[in-house]
Length: 294
Image 1 (tube, rainbow, N blue to C red):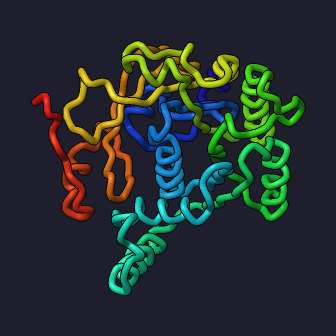
Image 2: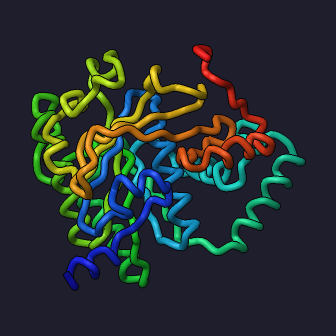
């Protein structure tokens, strides 16, 4: 019992209340969490929102990016944290001045360390991540969560990178990321894509068999959720649904949750925060349209 209680103390919440219920109120230090979706399915946007939430609660976080530049990720962090229109916040002297004022207020609140490291697509492995993490460790900085954007555009530390080895590579990379979480006693959160069939089927039918490139990825992950839109459950047009397809943190599998997206700032809200999402439209000028079926 004592070991269980100590283990629970080391969990890191996502600070999305409903999602935290699904994962038994936090990610353990030795774990790999994956979010999957089709192309342009808000995968990277969700990771950056998680990065912002965790750092806002004082956690040190690091994001290894193989797709988006440091500059673009930083812009998204600024827009999410200040509720600014990402397409307008740098377009005039007035908007830049307004953004600067908002960022100064954000800094006064006190945040954890946020590090973004960019690598060429398809060239980085956990060996590169390990080197970076050790360098920061020598400087006295330990990270509470490691983010990887994203798993299937990495290369394996040990195996080849040939197209005919997609299954082996995907499985190996997932195993290596999970091993990295054990080595540094830090949860790892990453994303991946659905395959062609998963993109075309109804959201309620999508499952583990629709993972892009390698079904072997699911064997190593501790928690997996597929993101998309269930037309049947859609109330607002800016909803993002997720379905839990694997869950070692709790017994809840097959259940669905819901996020709300502000498309001006790219901030993502938990379904328990719908009142905040509706209110924040006054700041972002984003639309809150009801689905046409209503």
